[in-house]
Amino acid sequence: MSQTFTERRWTSADGLSLYARDYAGAAGLAKLPVIAIHGLTRNSADFDSIAPLIAQTGRRVLAVDVRGRGKSDRAPDPMTYQPATYAQDVLALLQQAGIEKAVFMGTSMGGLITMALAAIRSKVIAGAIINDVGPEVAKEGLARIAAYSGQPVDTPTWADAAAYAKKINAVAFPHYKAKDWDAFARRIFTEGTEGAPILNYDPDIAVPIKAAGAKALVPNLWPMFGKLTKGRPVLLVRGATSDLLSEEIAAKMRKRAPRMDFVEVPGVGHAPMLDEPEARAAIFPFLGELP
Image (cartoon, rainbow, N blue to C red; front, side):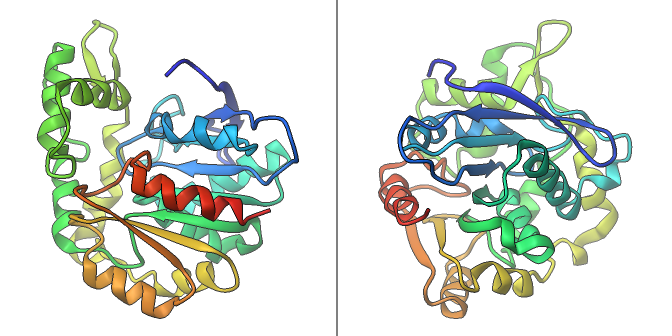
């Protein structure tokens, strides 16, 4: 897709220069913007299909590169690679962009950051789309993600990068073809100084995960989920074969928040890209009901 965004930078409380893709909303009645937040090892490019479509409905979309990812600065202290810090970084963006309230769309870790925001300053959240994550997560999925996060990869060519993308994500997207994996690689890798593709994140993002150990890998975020779903619209998206957001956890979330909207994306694991027909069929009506 052609570049439909401008590049925006903002500064974190600890002085990092952070980056977002800023998709201008189409002309018409002003609507609240959408803040899109990616998963652990990903970046703003994950929203390159859905963000322009949302912008066409009149909502500005800011897709962020969380610190240590994409075009955002890497943190000198890797222990700041935690959802509470990421949430403060997002609040700094809102403050510097003059945004008082927004709709949040968070994939995986981005969903956890949205829950953290609900705990820190819930009034900034008008509504939320939580993509394939919950206040607790399945240990199998977390172990799979932790196994590759921050690990060195040998990808001298873009074909190698596509092979790597397929190796770690084929379980989630069994229907993907070669061209899909090539596009996937272009989102998660960047060109290094020698011209070879390198993963587009700081390997040190894994430091807090390793420091916490296995027991702390699955925190209890139910109180934050309660704050997020209290008195505001929330849409939960689940990949039907997700190994991170199990059917049981999704059912528990729906029981705790009976008014929450829910959609399951068939044939996809962790995490849907949100451009799937089923995801879009839930997202656009959900956004349509929001100011």
